[in-house]
Every structure is written in C-alpha cells, then in structure tokens.
Length: 138
Image 1 (cartoon, rainbow, N blue to C red):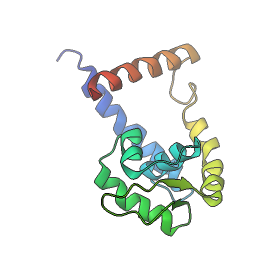
Image 2: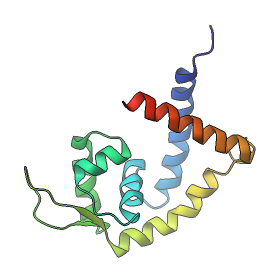
Image 3: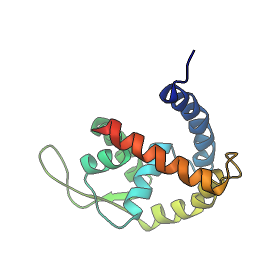
Image 4: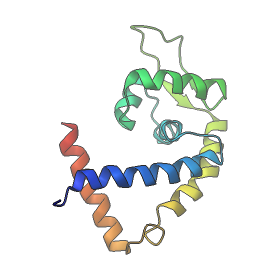
C-alpha cells in the first residue's frame, strides 16, 4: 500500500488523543473543555457558535461542554442565552487557575523530544499540519 498521509494522521491522532486525555484528566478536563478554556483565556468573550468554530467541533457538542464548565464555575455567561440570543462565555478566575495548572503538562507533552522530533522538525510539522487543516476546512 502506498503512503496515505491523512490515514497516517488519523492513526497518529488516536495516540495523541489518548496522551492528551491523560494530561487533561489530571485536572478533570476533557480535550474539548481544555480547548474552550484555552480559547477564552486569550481574552475574547465568545459565543458558543464562535467557540465551536475556533476549536473545530459542532455547535451542538459545545452546548453540553459549556454547561459542564459553568456548573464547575470555570466559565460564566454574560446573559441568559437561549435560542436567537447572543451571549458570550468568559473564563472565570477558577478556570484560569485550572488552565494554568495543566499548561506545564501540555507544554511537556508537546516538546520535540517527547514526540521524537528535532525542534526544526516539530516546527515544520506544525506548519504543515496548519496548511492541511486550513485546506481541508474550506
């Protein structure tokens, strides 16, 4: 069988997802919950639809995630929300603290040495993955 780069990417994604599940599990987060907190920590208050686009999940999936994060006091909403009403989510101080606790482990999991690459190769892989994601997202 010839090289199938996207199939290789899928196979690799399973291994990476398991690793990140372990990393995020140390603070009781899922990968999607981490994505929400990391996106909100950038400083913008985002609607659920905007967050879904940023972290590349379906808006319906994000509804349950947002509720679970609000119940834990990690994010809050700037209004009542509901169908047809824009309300933004924002990270709370507790959410920032939790994110700051897990970020060192996220950084360690991403080091070139941990993934078997040189620094240059890791930068090139990141660049190429962004191109693939951008191209296939259109």
